[in-house]
Length: 242
Image (tube, rainbow, N blue to C red; front, top):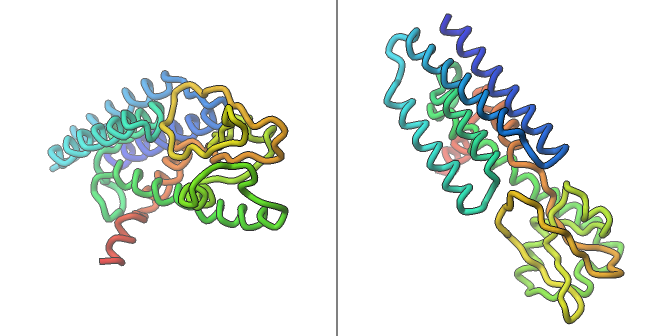
């Protein structure tokens, strides 16, 4: 009975994250009903697990849900990711607050998922560097762009230069914006907005700087899969360093 409940919870989380990722990639929006249904179902399954599991760690589960909630909505209010991402993390906390099935180094399961997702998301950095190195052979990367050396270096690590037509796709966010006096400027590390603002590129520009808009929930899905396999990348890296 206990194993069946855990398996149902893992299937629920995996399905919710997969559907949410698909919706976010396709339309940049996720139906809130997905999180309501998954959150209620996950919470009920957790209650059932508590009732059928001897010596279930109630205090640890409560701590996990509280800390994850504070983390999720704290980062949301700082504008570092969207509301759907915060809701997804809360659903994970309600459905699987404590790791009761695997060998993850961190017993607070949602934080394992979150840590894994952060590390996976950092893989964008080497990908951007490679893409920019390949494109550098075809001409100047910052022609007409007014920005400090520090901002240009940051752009190389976090963005790529694409055609204006490609930049207007929902899969990219502009970090290069036109100036009234001519030319353009870089605006890095902007807050995540719930509604995409209109994209304006420099008239006649052959290329414009963007960041790749991979939804954070996609990284949550990857982090969840790794956590189910008993892999905690962040804690493992910290352990190796220390």
